[in-house]
Image (cartoon, rainbow, N blue to C red; front, side, top):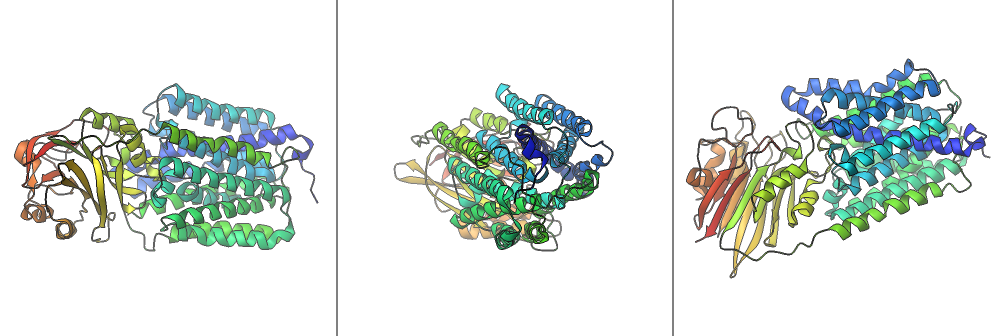
Length: 623
């Protein structure tokens, strides 16, 4: 039997509460995506401790709810600060760390106030916020508008902010209920950010184009929203088996999805999305009347879990954890599954106060909107027609540092402009992100392919969302990825070989590589030796990449002994650094090599602030 709740009496207020929670969730996720690259910059400069301290301070923001009054008097300060912060970081480029951190903290506090307002309907609010935020991210081809200039990006920020203000203005007072398991929202959000609502991760794991990845991701979000809406509207104590089954799926699913690739990852993602929505509905339904302030601690515990899961999962690729990496999402799934099962077993089962007689409209309207986006992406895709071969071939190599510039801003446009200005036939890139939170969840491979109108081939290295990329306007007739020997970190490394048709029945092999360097280890030399044993120069070959090796280091030996020639030492200045901020004169870890059957017409190092490395450009011709 449907329990009477404040939301049933006032459908408009119930609608406003859900809208407010959805908008607050979206604002929080957008501010966090702006924060993560800055925190990673702190890690690169100072190590784990200072990065963890900043993160913990931001994720503990819901504790401020202990000192704010209940109801509208406590909600408006959080809303105004979150909205002001979101608009401020949109217009203040580059936004300083303190501003982004404050905006993220206030946005998460606004989410806490939204939990109070939404009551047992919070499953729909959270799922709706994630769905629409993912739609926004996808519509901008995964380059979050929070990093972008211009009227369209500012409009997106204003729309989200307006929705939050409207919801707060019309939501009325608190519902007087709040789920016991608000801490479980932390693991729920971490699973969503890392896997479920991450179109770049979906594209990389399943080898999909941007339109197909958008369709899969947004369809999954719609399924999660449908499960949350139907579960919130009809969940009863007798549904124990259904919710327990969902709890089992969200418990084991993330651990399986973490290494999964191909079609299996698509199917598993869709199943987990539905289970995720049902689990959220079960937790939301366990919402007896309670003092809301006492839930601030539980919510803060959840957001700290959220941050800890993201931090640990990301850190493992740099500093391997003492346990397998899949344990991290498995632990998050276990916490969410246990919370859902316990909430159902308790049997409080307070159904949600969804406005209107047809709660599925809460699913149909957003789903119809977001599923249009893949069609728009497909329609805007450029024609990737191979260009005719030329007498000379221009090759550009660049470690793009995850597309994060010197100010900690994700800026693929500057990278694309710098590349396009050199008019290359082949582009070889390292440290290309495809869904990493510390790089704003951008799919840089797909974005650059779209912007430069060049097909690409991809080789994951550290994990499925980070690796090496080769783009070319010439006809790509073959490609192969190679996982290099591993010596315990930092990061696994790979190489990518692409075969290009250069006309008259001839081909050119282009190898992109990123070698590992570790103090006291010869891993770089071992990897270079393995690379030459597998792909030694047979025919015309260009090898380019970040070798993490200076001239004379052992890692360059296998390449030189194989007969490869350094373009910088042959046609450039050997004393010029390839780093934006060199540690010493002649600091050069980036290399371009050619086989003896290629002549090097020119070599140059291009100035740029878009990465901590500089682009190398050479022009070669077949002899």
